[in-house]
Amino acid sequence: MNSSLVVFNSLTSKKETFKSILPNKVGMYVCGPTVYSNVHLGNCRTFISFDLIFRYLQHLGYKVRYVRNITDVGHLENDSDYGEDRIAKKARLESIEPMEVVQRYTLDFRDTMTRFNALPPSIEPTATGHIVEQIELIKKIINQGDAYEVNGSVYFDIIKFNKKTPYGKLSGRLIEELIHNTRSLEGQIDKKNPQDFALWKKAEPEHIMHWPSPWGEGFPGWHLECTAMSQKYLGSQFDIHGGGMDLKFPHHECEIAQAESVYKKSPVNYWLHANMLTLNGKKMAKSTGNNILPDQMFSGENKVFKKAFSPMVVRFFMLQAHYRSIVDISEIALEASEKGFNRLVEGIKTLDNLVASSITSEFDLKAWKEKCYGAMNDDFNSPILIGYLFDAVKYINATANNKQEISTKDLEELKQIMNEFFNDVLGLKSDEKSIKLSENIKLQGTLDLLSEIRDKARNSKDFETSDLIRDALAKLNIQINDAPKGSSFKIK
Ligand code: AMP
Ligand code: ZN
Image 1 (tube, rainbow, N blue to C red):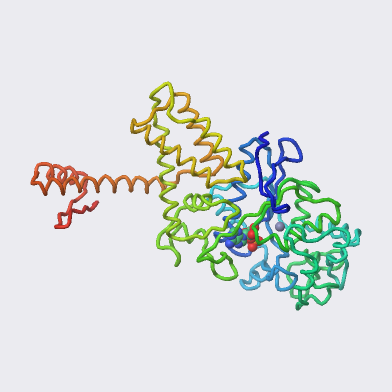
Image 2: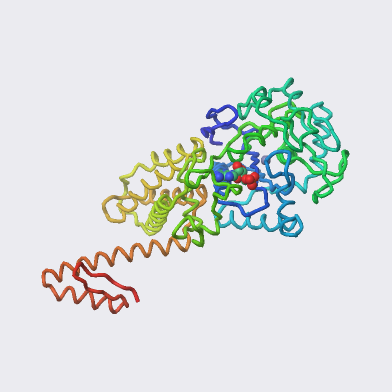
């Protein structure tokens, strides 16, 4: 297995050589969406980032068990232990069943990810499908002395846990700082310490999602599901845990505490966090309204962008940034990505039709291949990889124009590598729109050239040539309109 893969581990804030626990196998858990609304493009960026990682690990030959959950209970409005459950609130507002909310937005999420050509995870467990496992986990945490029950709710005792095992390793937040910054908030009067977090919450009479438990009717806390489900499917210690940067604290910090309380070891070897997508310089978020939905982007029906952009162009735009960098989405940036994407698609098409012309090549294929792998092995650096793919496109175009040469052997290998990186690793494919667009661009360029030649001919009174161009285009239903400043054309 390729041992030169290096990943940035958020737990140590360092790049580390990746070594899986079991040879040739990787266990990867990524926090999935809370299905109370349509996923926005920001959410999609995180899932596309992990799709790239999943794809590359598989490409390297690992057998990956990729678990990505669906949060369908327990995520309260304030990412904290008070406020209404997001799904229950949506159900109340629309007078429908919570599971109707869950079904609608799970389907939307899956459909959206399919349009982005993201591979489905190996297992997609739901929080409501794992209530039994979550209750069992709470019992174990109570047995360790790290949780307490008050009035039908169970809380994790951070102060007590921290005496045995340091809390805050991932986010770098010290417990003292946490104590200082946490105020006693509404609905948290039961807690011994305000910074403790809920493992189980008692269901108030108006709360429609609840299950029986040893502590009475209630529902699980948000952080618990990911520990219960990751342990169930990947074991008490697994290779990779991912999610958006904003989940580091408190969500992932609490996951670590829950697992360490029971299993007495660090649950995850490599914590990977994807950075945020911003719009107008601010984090894209459902709550602030600063967001755009994938459908609105693909149809062009939105107030932010003047034109529509296809799923593959948006995916390509996202992959042109490293997954740990912040990316601001804008019309100018998307248009540049669209051009780049079309150039890449064109290059691959040209490559498919390329004929070997020599027994040697004027391109060091071996060095180029190493650079491509070097980029991806360096913490999945897709923008650098894309840069190398463009280098290859330059060479492909030069070869197609007889300015460079390629051998039969290299041509076959280049085709294979380009296909593997473009399709399998980056998860790109030429979509209908990009094909049409690139054809339009070619047509536009040809017509511009023809009208320029025709203008020149007319200026030098070469009417034979100018009429020839006009008549030939007319036969193709393209009408040339002469004007003093130059001619223009209209496709009928
Ligand atoms: P949620 O449904 O709110 O739990 O979020 C699902 C995933 O989307 C989480 O991993 C978040 O970190 C991620 N996420 C939310 N907003 C953004 C954003 N603006 N850019 C990138 N990822 C985001
Ligand atoms: Zn999670």
